[in-house]
Length: 253
Image (cartoon, rainbow, N blue to C red; front, side):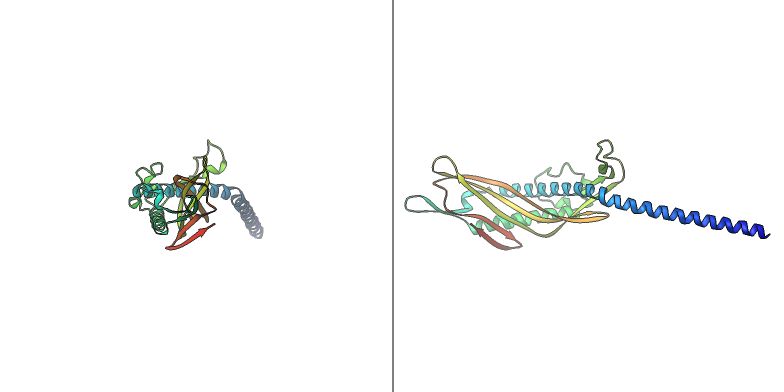
């Protein structure tokens, strides 16, 4: 009887040691996987997510500005006040603050409205040209998901890129949308100046994946007009005018 009890005791100890060994190995493997995941997989997923977020955000900004400029039938002459001297030489190019503020405020609101609609899945409320988001899965967009990233993309292998579970990518607009008019004046031909005008939009978005989150700043400038002005390049001209949450801050040279 004692021999049987000793045998059972040894088996229990051996079994306990096996269990402990398995747990230790599992812990080591888990730790190694987490280190690998953090150093190898996360950066690839984050780079992919950032690329997709920038792509969509820039697309929305470009289309929103294009739509607004087209609807307003924008005339470059309405944006600026050109002051000349008695010799008909340009002394100053300045912004028409009323017109510029109106345009930028409208663009600011339009960009924010569209990005919020995408964030919340309300794509029926988008105020963008038709077919702007035709390359995106409409059903996913209705759930507030930009796209789904196959885990196989982390392999870098084209054959495996669509294999594995798919990770939903969402974005959130954080902070204010800052819009501004940017100009560039340069010589054009003989005794002429070329005035290039663009609308710049800068905003912060948060990338949301199931297991990580990060924020990025997106900034893009969309050209809206070019104008040839007779006369030499003036020494003074307005080169920046921005709108941020209803507060206007002109920035001159």
